[in-house]
Length: 335
View 1 (cartoon, helix red, strand yellow):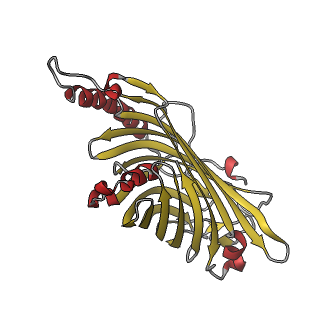
View 2: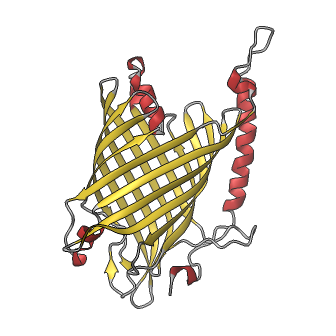
View 3: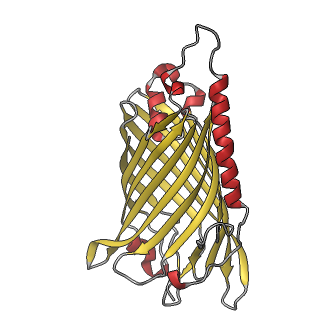
């Protein structure tokens, strides 16, 4: 049975939509309060152009793209890793639809990841699969940290093949990050040698997500968190840290680490449901070349993970989402 035809499974979360509405209300109130208290009273007071503009349509956008090549493929599973991981692309677009007093932002983001495989003695550049994400986000910027709440809707589809069922899920999340959590802001700050401080050299972002199956009965919409017909995700926690090691003004060498830990339900062969913890760790070195908010980068990323096996249509268990033991080499740009 195709994934789209399977009934939703997993725990429901009736309180999450209400929580999002509360967050929106609090963010608007705090944005007004933060801006009001920052005004200087008296005749010498002069509102800045940012604070004077309460509502700003499309105040900013961010673009990130890269292309990478995989090596050090793991053996086993009928050559799955070598056959499926040859090249991968990524394009990530994030647009702020509006901001309120430059404190509260409403973002919409889209990212697309096409994957190329390598079929021995047949096709070198073999389109294998594609995954994409549509993500509305509320962002509240306070003096020392950025706070977020949003929904990640991600789908995984094969290209011209029927080896697996489609994968799709919806994840409600809350997150916090440094003021320079986006690459453009991170590099813009480091370009100035006077700003070469420990605080500016560190970039961090942390997120907790809960995979939902409904929206609390507020609207007639079913949200599915199935990863496959035998795997149901529940929740996950991720953290991302980048540290600038060397600064040559226009060239920055970074160490980058990303950690993901999650909890899932896995259906056993005899119908029993097992509680499992999955994880992924990325360790990479990056060279960034930038003249400010626009730049490019090279990177080498080594991946280890313990992700659950996914049942294919033929009944075999395959590491569909795993990149365990692979070295990913790539280049990209941001603006």
